[in-house]
Amino acid sequence: MHQLALYETQTGVILKEQITAEKQNELSIVAQFLTPVLVKGRIISADALHTQCAFCLQVKRWEGDYVLIAKGNPPTLRDDLQLFFREPPADCRDWRSARTVDKGHGRLEIRELVATTELNDFLAKHWVGVAQVFRLTRTVEEDGQTRTEVVYGITSLAPHKASAQRLLHLVREHWAIENRLHWRRDVTLGEDHCQVRKGDAPRVLAILNSFLLAVLDFVGVANVPKQMRIFDAQPLLAVRLLLGSLLTFK
Image (tube, rainbow, N blue to C red; front, top):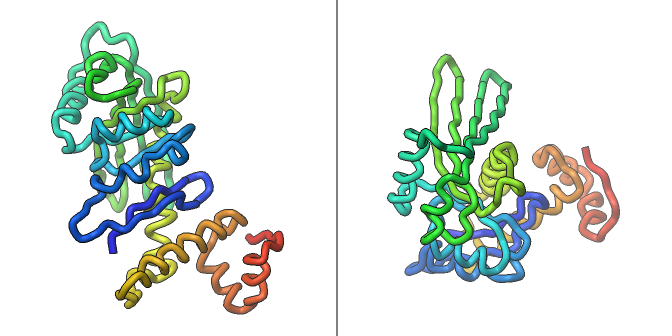
């Protein structure tokens, strides 16, 4: 089962999900997610697969904004961004940067982002609403080794709406769908080892697991495995939670 989900990072709620059929892929069904109700007033991020001109057009059409990473799809966009940031023009007037450093558990991660509006006119013909481009460099030191990754992106958020510092935050928030949804479903809730295969059962199970994680996020559960053990020992707590009782977990 391949599930495409629209995940709200602030609440942990899946706003919409859809299973891709045998002869479908994500690109063929993503239009079902880009509707006025789901897009208006939101900032939409997506895997690099969806960095498409049509995607940007639909998001702006329904009064949303986008933050997208440019990889090999389409290749010309990444090449243009890479060339610009490698050899910025001498008269470049807009060059804003931000940096974060995270250290813990023997791992040091430095994230540096540079944003500019200098390419807006050049890209605007094909990329509707583009207001900034950026380069993000991640440097990780761990176990005596250093690795560096550089990615490029575009956004419809103008500088007064998204500084370089906020863009750093937004790009990082994109990975919540992997870290807080997919990983917890696969590992914490055991979907990777689940043998449910037939009919609609896998989809129903995935929706139930996503709902459970959203509820636990809503009531402030920081450690899901620990809270599950508490529910196992005190099932009435889970019943009261589902019936709407106000509970606080730590």
